[in-house]
Amino acid sequence: MLTISKVENEFNCKVYVKHYRTVNNRGGATIVTVKEPIPRLTWCSIGSIKTVDYLVADGVALCDSKDYYNKKLGVRIALGRALKQLKLPTK
View (cartoon, rainbow, N blue to C red):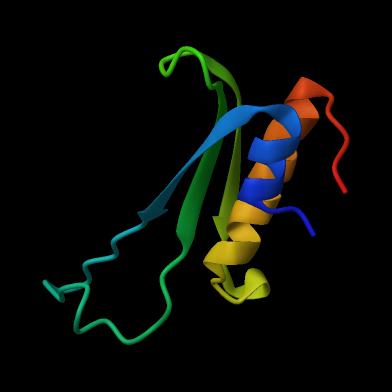
């Protein structure tokens, strides 16, 4: 299974992950009162360990109802897409 720690250890890089929620305010309802699941955008980037600001590749995944709104699955998809940009093997 593809995990952040495996990628960091195997390829000697740093993986950054950000999760974004799309806010759907219908009729002034806040995020707390909206009962239905909200799609999430997961952004994963791979950078060099030696220079923090050096971005090598990034991948994006949208977690929606077919992914059961799962963050871990979103991270794995986004990380796989970032590795695909680098042409690194995914296991």
